[in-house]
Image (tube, rainbow, N blue to C red):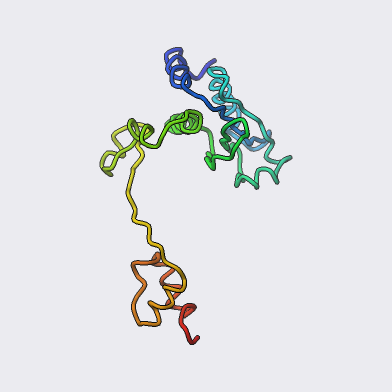
Length: 189
């Protein structure tokens, strides 16, 4: 029995239509001790039935443990998305069955890597600059927050500390605590 209704299948076919890059999903599974591997396999099969641009490669977590570890996967089910003909690692990972809201997160990730679009085009439908907008969509939104990059070097940190000034706004608080407690940037330790 299909998990996706005919209406959902049609909507996903339309969503996948503009894909220009193939996406490969590495599906890390195991035969024993994985309660949601069968459900994950069915979800992935239904996705691949809708478009030739998405393929799934099953990888046994136990038999190919080194490969799983190289992707940071330590439990099943685990998904790794690779993009393009060269199967470039997208650094997108999912642990657990991609069901419920996580299903839409998987679809969004596939489209993000399978459709060539600019950041601006992606943000038209999903982006927001307002925190209170994050929960208005069932699948969530992408919060875009401009951050000023601070170019700070260890030499500058030493000079600031030697001058008796506090580096509080230049480094994260835990880093600041370590610097001040250990004295690692003091000129005369």
